[in-house]
Length: 154
Image 1 (cartoon, rainbow, N blue to C red):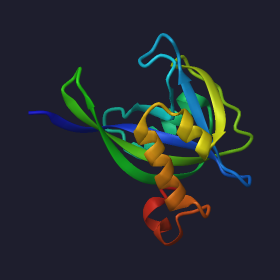
Image 2: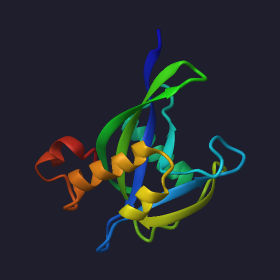
Image 3: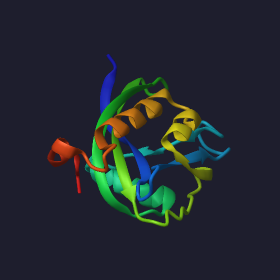
Image 4: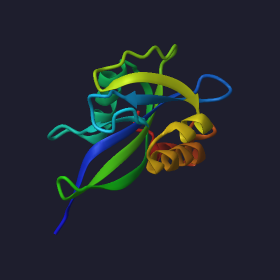
């Protein structure tokens, strides 16, 4: 039997205070898993940590950014063969404060603020491209509209 664990967050840092939204893309350092790959903020939830708290913590630790608004977007499964576990990532969109000055941690060697289309072309994982589509559909008007009460965390 393979276990299913909810223990990961994927967080899309978004600068939406302009005509075209910018999404943060992070390039993994050569000393980490998937060296050189481009991805969103991604990290493990700590024991007894709620996904939304992990999302804010991971944004702060990996980028130094402050979250103004946080939205729950979707959940995405992936298989970790080394552990024999299907891991579930809880996906968030984090609207961050301007000017969007990023301070990278050891896991990443480079970052870029990209348009949604550019980020979709840059991200390594197909599930990240899919999440960008969800974000555009759900939040494209600047908020979640009639689903604001369900999707907005704060």
